[in-house]
Image 1 (cartoon, rainbow, N blue to C red):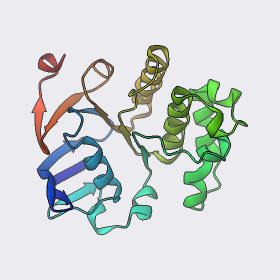
Image 2: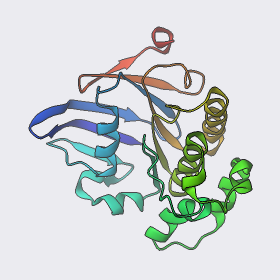
Image 3: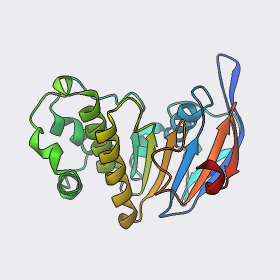
Image 4: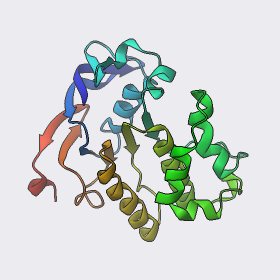
Length: 219
């Protein structure tokens, strides 16, 4: 379970998150819906340890993430797809996918093989440099990289933003198939247009504060 309890976060003394709390039971997929600037990306980065929180705690299973460094959190099987993809341009697709394994000193090929089985199209351009890919293809690679790392928890920040409808649909298919893997997944979106059919529950974030939503109201 991912449990966030009353965290706050300010950037340059401007409050961005205010007493944020949420729970995502293990093996469920949760939506985080909010407009641009509402605090979605800030929350994702706080979970990953890329931004320091003020008070409160973030726990994943038996681990208190707020007591751990960012690289230690990744070692717990947490994968992160940032909104801006953050691929290494001069690395090949496969090298980008393997970065989390290298960073954690892992040599297990099982996750890489599984990703190629889930997204065979990635294998067809695995030797291309990331900088030669379209924006949508880069999103697929960034998702694949997150999946390699995220054996337990996936944080997907605006995965459908800025991609063509066909690729957005493909991303949604892959994310939907992850439900059979019993992964815990948090997906952020500015609206509810893509993830409606796969999420088990939905949180709304507005001005850095979170409330639970009824899925019937969000549709």
